[in-house]
Length: 166
Length: 362
Figure 1 (cartoon, rainbow over the protein chains, first blue to last red):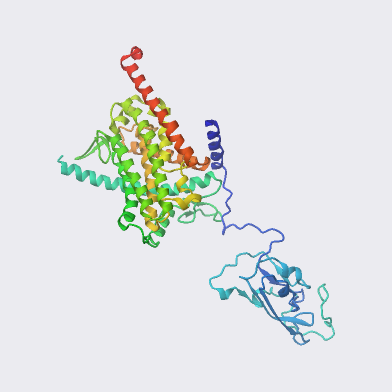
Figure 2 (cartoon, chains in turn red, cyan):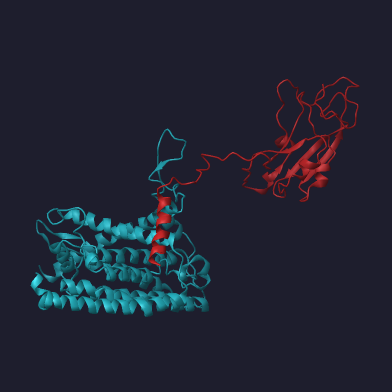
């Protein structure tokens, strides 16, 4: 019995001489895994048009009822997305969101995507409603900012093609 | 020196040593958290006060967390001071003090260094707050027994059935192991021939051997009894986090709880100091010349106290805890007969050496 007691103590003292496994957050952050579900982002095509067509399938799929979408018509003078409609109001309530990824699965145009950011703390509840301008990604290089003026007849499908429009 | 002068000197020396040991207690809590963390393959608190090492990305901090005890003390002072309405106000306030005061009082008779003279200030033959107490060991036993009052009154004054039961179980545990503790204090007294702690240290210095080598069984029984007296792992059933609903200090908050906490750690330091004095050789330690340069004696005894605290923390990280009936069985059925047998054997060997068959060897 004394032998087992001493063996237990030997096991713990070995750990004293190994470097600890603690990661010194926030100076050092662990990289997230491949399909990590963090903060949402609304993506754009390469020419600057938004991918979101305002169909609100994400709002229908959300189990926590966190997404609010209002759609508006695209015209050729003011075009936001290559489809018939765009999301004029898009809000996600981050306290309700459970980060399940159903909105990402439901989206037909791969507009809403869950990215890596997990540092989402807040000081007051009003700041947890993330609006469209907080969620949309910036315009990529080579693209023009929305609203764009496009030639008529180019984007006349109600639901756009999945490839990047020319 | 007149008795008034002696009392004044004892008072001032007592204040200084008490403040030093209370600072030591604060850093013992930090030592425990950091050593326990390192034994569990993680770092302890390292944010509350550190010296940043430049060049690295903030992963290495020198002296990480050395202000953590100050932060804990400030937090405890700022907590709400409440009292259960059915609790007796006087005893509710008195119980933490009754737990802390004996813990600090034990340090009055421990010899910290060899005697020295500083002009008119004479500390002979050894430096302690109350030197030349003929019955030092008896004083320690008596004061340790008073510490039990704090626990049982703390449990009773909380006016909660579970606290009362916790307090009574804690005091039963402490009383049972005091028997084995007291009996294991006898062999050093028998070997040194006096109950004066300074005399015991002087004999260890004269024979150049710590009593732990001459009396290993008694040293081990003393250490186990000290762990049980402090309600320290593996005997900490009553203060384990999972069991706190029946603890005696569950109804205490803020600095009152801080005082119970302080009582436990101060008793840890005091009992480690007694262990170092009686069994490990006191201030005659690994570093020689403790008589000529008294400050080396202080460093020696500090090294021994820290080693004993490290052993307590190492035990806490390594072993599971006892169930209450196993604990009581160990105290009464095994440690008490073993320490009695050890005392009888020591007495027999001493008589044999002095007058009997083995006297011709020396």
